[in-house]
Length: 165
Image (cartoon, rainbow, N blue to C red):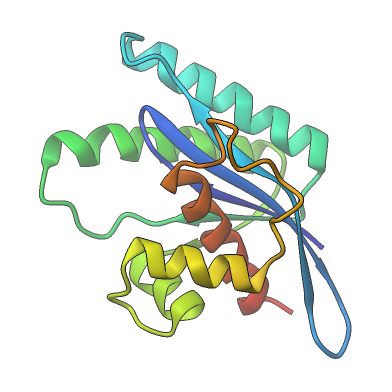
């Protein structure tokens, strides 16, 4: 089973493609991960168009059976929640067009699943991701892989892998 994990963001959207091999112990393998980065000077429409096109390309290239998306549940800043919600909308549109099953997880759910503690710090979650999935074969110095958003997308994808059969 191939899973596409997405951490939506209006400027940086993290993505991860993982493969779950069935067996007595599920084996998870990272196929690809990184970020879709839009120019901060783009209009909202231009950003959404780029994110939609890039997510569609990922779906067409890797042919996932499931998409897992980080769910917004609380934001202190309304200026942040609106653009991220719009981004999530085009991501869900891409999934619907390709008839993908979509799972949504809050950051708290992802932290609980990955680190066993819902208030875990980002670095703790990243360390657990590195222990859960072998990412040594990837060049982490590439600009689009060292960002927190890419690791967040891996966490969302792992969460879906562990929650599905």
